[in-house]
Image (tube, rainbow, N blue to C red; front, side, top):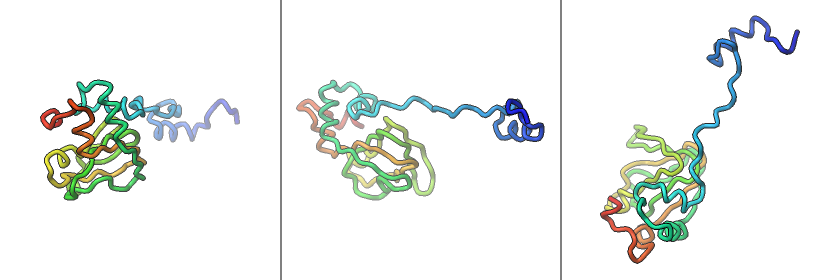
Length: 156
């Protein structure tokens, strides 16, 4: 068989599988560009932290703790007491309210601020869809990174 041509019986199969009438196998999807992996750079794009000076972002990043979570493991669970705010550095996480999937988080997304700032139990469960790399900040770090740091009004 000529290596440059597909056998006639295979062409319709490849066309059906690939969705391309020619049966061409598409190149792997590279996806959307990843957000910067450096914590201070990711903090810059977190809507809650917009407007902070670079120095304050660097201080927050330095006060934060990096954590890895394997795929399938819960980062936080609904009803638990809140002690940390999280920024997703790498990976994808699912947010559940009860058994219902609410959204998928990607690098640059954050969670945990509602329960942390309002002193209420967690309102949702966040579970790793893939392995996760997270930056976490406790309440004191979040609110007091600089003398003129964040106020609760900025974060709500």
